[in-house]
Image 1 (tube, each protein chain N blue to C red):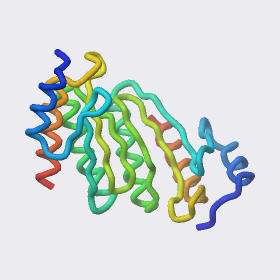
Image 2 (image 1 turned 180 degrees about the horizontal axis):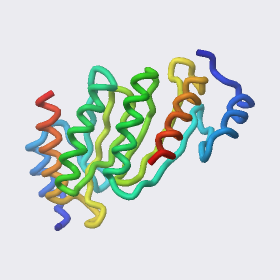
Image 3 (image 1 turned 30 degrees about the horizontal axis):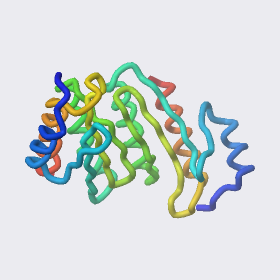
Length: 95
Length: 95
């Protein structure tokens, strides 16, 4: 999987809502009502991540979820990260 | 819930395996075989945390899980944190 250029990353970021390119990864955060809501979304994302064999780096603090996607093997952002980002957006929007 | 003194914290840490007191919280990390194993443990912890109404601050990166417990309302470590730490140890040991 090829590491994307900054220009390619910026183009794809334009198609997402609230993600930022930072330190060779793309990042976002969400705030839910309660812990249960955050963890339910995490569980749905976990199944999809496992299916993609591409996993988020993520931090949960009660109702908050911070997500960072990067492709460690490629040393940057690849299409896999954007594919997973779109899946995550779809899950969060469907809540 | 009363904030514990450093002495009380040190005493209780002695009864746990691999936890450290840091920046007004107690912290540990675990490494599992795969993402699925880490997330399975997180799910079991999530149910118990919800039952206790006391939740971890935690970060997952593939097979690694970093956990920090502190009682935000008390501005430090309380008995609730040690109760949850013991529950987490029990879950991880049973894997």
